[in-house]
Length: 376
Ligand SMILES: Cc1ncc(COP(=O)(O)O)c(C=O)c1O
Image 1 (cartoon, rainbow, N blue to C red):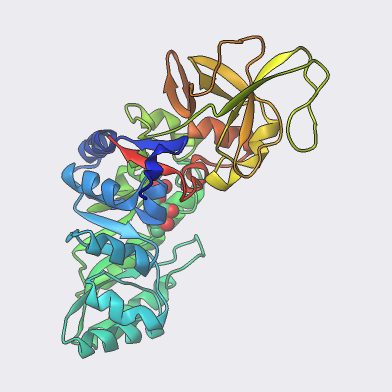
Image 2: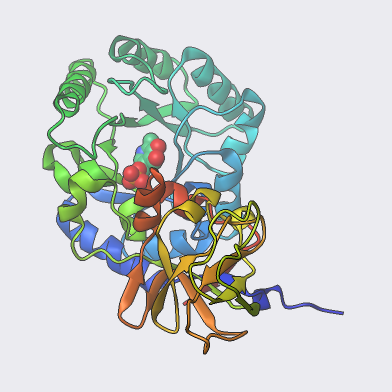
């Protein structure tokens, strides 16, 4: 017996044409810098392979991922563009990095040695990118270490320094003084390496926010993540995101309806008694699918038949209930828009994020594996 799992009553729609539109708009703004599309975390929940294909079709020239599995999946899908691993990886995976032609980030002598050994064993020259920690203090060589690291890399015939990069901690607050400080520290490393004859062909620092906000941070490549998906990096750069369109909608169908009397309450905890008799619609999507449980105590509304509806009680693992008040027309099978447009109304991942004190990134990355992605 074959089952079409796409028929589940909860799904995400991803418009790859919108991804292309967003990449094209940003490509124009950041030119002549090239774009490497950040497709880690399953393309921020949108699907890494279709997003990568769309971004490359729209002019991106490379891709970035967080872990080796993600790079291997892209290669297995036939993608031949450069794929940068954004931090050092476990030594055990070096031979896969080399074998699958992924571009490693290096930040320590140990990390360099491991890749050099795997490259020599495979009789290949591997291009590496040096990551410099200029103030974020997550990963990367310190500016001084980076200079020494470059000499160390040059001692291996099997390695080539293709890239040099850093990452901003507060790019989404363009006027924060740390941005200028980090940029100055990075420029100093670029200059010191140039004095020593090391001129990597790809210099990069900017994520979406920095790419949009600061031309000096673009160098000759930007690592474009959230803006490509049509979400804003943060409120401080919202005005720079004009023209970008969210590429993902999250939808479901009403699976059950019932009339619940005034004074009764809905779901675990029976926390919010109804003021009037209400039609309660159940939708088979829950926190295991990425609808945050915390959303159940906010006044975020989702859409049925073009009308905003409030979440009626605690969001459960696989289902949630919506309060449709005295709209007795809502019925089983009606489409529910959790994120996206229905009629005149739009619900955004950023609105969910704002309501529960997080960021749009976490909302879209959190959409669960069992939510079927439909591509348009
Ligand atoms: C090192 C690095 N570069 C670029 C990005 C892309 O950032 P954004 O999605 O804000 O564009 C990320 C994402 O977290 C990252 O970790």
